[in-house]
Length: 420
Image (cartoon, rainbow, N blue to C red; front, side, top):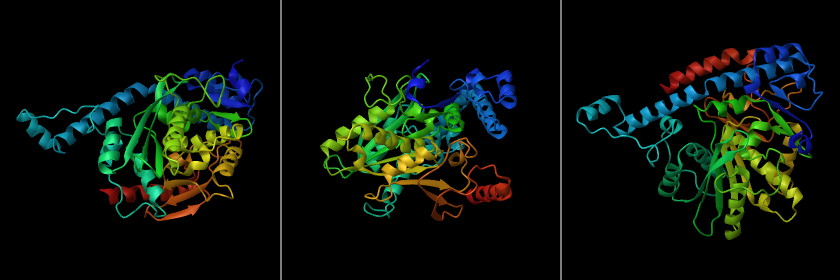
């Protein structure tokens, strides 16, 4: 028996790497999920609802397919990204690239340079902040958060160049963090402040789902969860990415090496140090897609540790959490726990979840029956005409409802025409 049984009240971990035809058929035909090779959970766990087993089946199959294409997809991504940088560095067009080649003047992209952009950064090259939105405006932090979430996809040198040369702010640190369960550096984030000294604001931005990273997409569609005592059930993949410890869960302190930092602990300690030196400063946490999930999970673990240590007031310095295209991260109890600490009677609303139109990522993992996952907090829904409105839940919450099928594809076709 490992530490999960001791720390977590309950858990269900999908293991697609152990899945096969036999385990998939077993999922469809038997309610004894504890006996399934692709599902790890406490002995005796059953699932009597066929619909729930079907959703688990789909999640396992999707992850199996994503793991199968992991290597070729990553290679394709590197090739596409390199080609796009090659074209951009040589004038922005294939014809100019050919002319430079004929003249022996081809500029070769350097992946480690401050000019090498990500796939997302090349699709949308905007890096400047909106000059119309000033500090103190009601939408300033949301506008700053979305740009920080966007450049979080870039390498460290690009991020530093944008923050310091374009935004005229202070770049503080880039985090490349270890995931003990995957045995790799899977989580990236960065931190910056509005000023180098006597700062008023510090921002932590988590990198989101990389388009060509199959494991990122697998994490998004994963239905694994762990039950944190006194908190609720939270998404297993997101917790692992944030720094969950294999046998001890979320201890308040750990001994981590500098070579293999864990995201939650490294960022928390860096925040404490900076805020101690800047007593007026507040902090904002933000992220897009997978990064949004990590952004809202981060203060949840701060709240968990704050209850264990009454002298730790880091959460009191939190100004807000702003997420964009964020997937679901926990069950109803988990949401209630987070809301109690983020939206207390003594504090205005501090959590804003932005959803654009028919984006699929905020609609996963599946919300239905006993499958646990629920959104919480204030949803700011932005429709296809860029009109924003606050609501509890975005329309078509599970994406695949037949009621929304025709309008969804009609809107997709219209957006393609509008963007051409």
